[in-house]
Length: 566
Image 1 (spheres, rainbow, N blue to C red):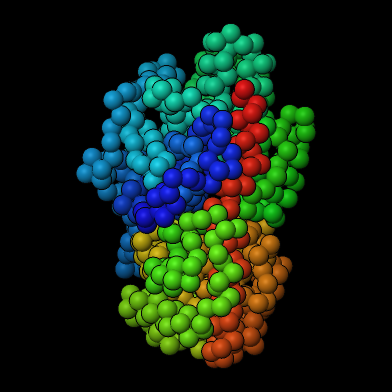
Image 2 (image 1 turned 45 degrees about the horizontal axis):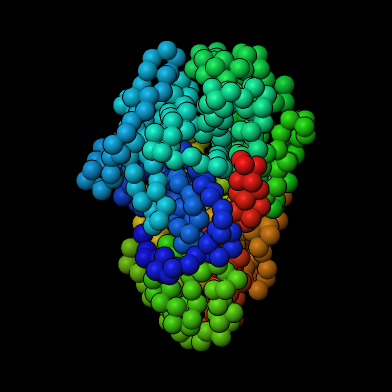
């Protein structure tokens, strides 16, 4: 992790803004954390965001701990066979060799009558400890196995995580559930309050008052559901100990008349504070969960995601920014970002040229040709093939495209789409389209800043946020995106282009028209392009810094929840 400048100072944003006389501790639970490419406990955007969150919390001096799972087989490593089909392989992970510290305490979680031992590992992310729980045969791989395997993992995270913090002598005053995977922690917390003498209704009220829930996507994969039988078999006993009957438990997970048990409804009912991850996503989430009576759930606001600038701004550019007096690790309001508007365009062009050359060395592409980047999970709603829908028209333009990303092993449609793009790169578009396999954090740090344009073409409104576009923007890479997620609130013609997001046909036509009539001509006009790059950095780096996001979570949710805990 890049060295933090703030941590060398005696005071922090937290100590100056809120810390005096306050004994707050936030426990941040997530199914995945992307803090280091060598620590394979993340799959994509959710995990990288959680890793960035811990880094920013550390720089702000926020009293926070992370809780996740240690996956011995990690997430899969991607390769391609001779037909262009994705091949998944798992490699064993040695926590000791990586440098994780095993804590001298352990806990047990009862899974359907069978006690399971849980080992606790620690990885420090700056000043923030990240506790990773391991249960043999259960925390084997990320997002693998059947529904029973998944609920077992999520119980280790939720129930085991609460018990682990207690065993470590930590008493959080605020619990943050980052997506619904850890939502069962609320049942364990209620059980513990009842054990201490609270009535069940009071216990649930106290759990809710001190809980924050972030929903990350309208896509079903991020809003997990389980069969009632599975929930009762695994969660019935701790719920009963919390004074929650079987019918009451199932009712906590009901929504829209569905027969199954949803983790998002559970989290919304047992959290007083809830949010989406962009302004538009907040609106979508409110509509999506409107069937839950307002008196039963948290009001859903929004905190737009951010990215950790120290991790994602290329070192060459970061050096230029620091020389101009800008502090990447300071709260944006005092980071000196106004100095970006005075950066010499020739200096900026020189840095960007070096980043393009580095990517060209990796891809074999022409570093002088306008390079478009598209790298993200190969889910069908992200429409990776949209830009290739009229290949003849695309190849008539002086552009080249770098594509990367993984499809979930169980997503056949996503794997089909990925194969189509790989076949294009090997055939009709060879030399103009390159697919880079094995997309991870390390590859992203070369790919994203090495492009000129970052393309994002999701089916609106399914892209809740889209942090890859933020990573591009803070490096002076210009966004060409559907008005979805973060771009719906960030777009300005001074530093990018917008696609309306109407239909496949209309969006493809608009995309090609923008490329031909504006993007390509502007790239040829070097001063215009450099001015747009500078505007992108100046405007979007402070606005979409993860430091800004963590400050918003703290002010809006953590401090009020901490007050409720007392």
